[in-house]
Image (cartoon, rainbow, N blue to C red; front, side, top):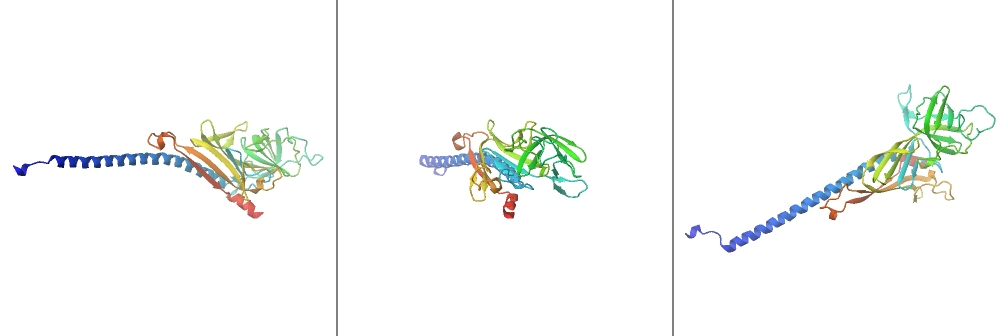
Length: 312
């Protein structure tokens, strides 16, 4: 009978106590692991959103200034609060060539009139400019941007219509005072019969849509000159861009008209972008139920700007 005796009460209590301790510890470890996993997942979605935005910004910034030399009052990189704009000259597949080349430059057509300048306005209408083709192909179409040089004066124009003839091409443009943060239109600037030219440019704009907290990217403009943006990142609660100058300073934008000669457009060496991105939704198990948000910063120095500065 002694060989068939079971556990004593003390042994049973000890076994239950040890079992409860193991179960509680295991449960607590599982809960912590589950919360950590959910927290990692939430933060990873934020980081993934930021990585995509950063890659897009770096890719476009790397092309800023291609074949487009900046001036004191007209630069290939521009900022303004929550907006970043980048300009470059596109490369085209020219007919009868095996390689690509930059967009052609067209000189203003000289009608042979008296005086070095045309009357204020275009040379074929108030918002019309006529250029010599010089046997070059026409790549420009409505909705494109052109960079107009009038001596040392520079303008960014949005093309409204193109009439290609031989030997000239006529371009009508939107008459607005500013476009992509740069001077636009002709105003009272006299057109030089010799020394005025145009060239197609490509623009990329980034800005934050405040109502929807989205980071938008635009490469095209509407008929009224408004950028047509597509979402690059969502839940962007803050976005700022500042230009960096060769002397180590930074500013909200360049200014080639003030007395400071160190903050001109041709002194820009890079751009600094900061953005705050939040998780899509709150998770009760992460960050006390408050939506996770993180700050990100990117500093970009386009090689084309470096080349400009080294050449000087």
